[in-house]
Amino acid sequence: MNRKELFEQIKKKESYLCVGLDTDIEKIPSHLLKTDDPIFEFNKQIIDATHEYAIAYKPNTAFYESQGAKGWDSLQKTLDYIPKNCFTIADAKRGDIGNTSALYARTFFKNMNFDAITVAPYMGEDSVMPFLEFPGKWVILLVHTSNSGSIDFQQLETRHGKFLYEEVIFASQQWTSADSMMYVVGATKADKIGNIRALSPDHFLLVPGVGAQGGDLEAVSKAGINPQCGLIVNSSRAIIYASSKEDFADAAGKAAKKVKEEMSGYLNTYLI
Image (tube, rainbow, N blue to C red; front, side, top):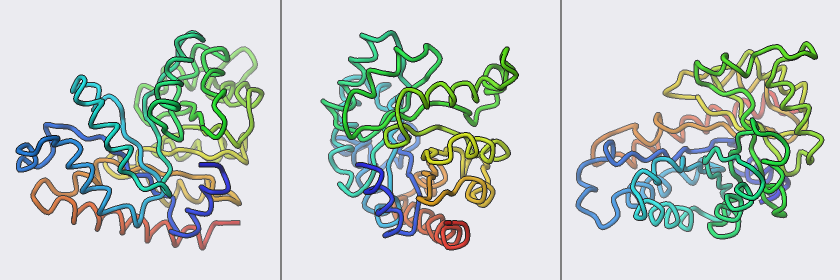
C-alpha cells in the first residue's frame, strides 16, 4: 500500500487507528481453546469486529513465534484474513548485518507479504537498506519508544549536541524518502512528538502506547497530524482485551469505534 492509498483509507474511514494483534494464548477467552487454531480464531473475530474502524493491523510477531511452527501458521492465516484495504505491519523489530537483514526482509515482504516492518536502526545504514529494496514496502524505524528504558540510550546527547533519536532521524532521511519510511514514536512521549514532527514533516509516525499504556490521543494528534494525517496510532490491549468473556469481539468493536470517533474529531480539527 503506497502513501496515497493509505491516506485515502484514512479519509474514507475518518480514522488513523491501528489495532495491535498482540494475541496471547494465555489471555484469550477460554472457550476459544477448543478450536483448531485458537489464536487465529481470536484474531478473526477481532478483525471482523474492528475493520470498519481501523486502517491498519499490527501483529507483534513475538506472540506468534512463542508458539513455534503453529504460531507462524496462525500469523500467516491472520495476515491473509486482514482486508486488503487495511495496512499491515509486522511488528518484528528486526535489524542485523546486511545479509541477515536481507533474509528478514524476504521473510516478511516476499513470503508473507506484509506492507511494513518495524526495524531497529542501532546497527546502522547497512542493516536497514535491505528492507528498502522491496518496492511498495515500508520500513518503520524505532526512533523514540514508549518504554521507560528508552531514556537509557535514545535521549543520550551526541557529540553534535543532539539526542541520539534525532541523529537516527537525520541519518535515515538520507537513505530513502518519506514514501517508504516511517518512524515509531511512543504515545507516552507526546512531548517529543512535536519535535519529531518538526524534524520529519512529511513522514508517517507509528504511535503505540494509546490505551493500556496511558498515551494521550489528543496530545498525540495535536502535535503529530500533518497535511496527509501522518499518523498511525496503535492500540492493542485496550481493544483486543476489552472483554475476556464470550462477548470479546463485540467489546473490541465498541472500543475501536470509540477511538475512531475521537480520531474523526481530531482530523476535522487539526488536519491542515
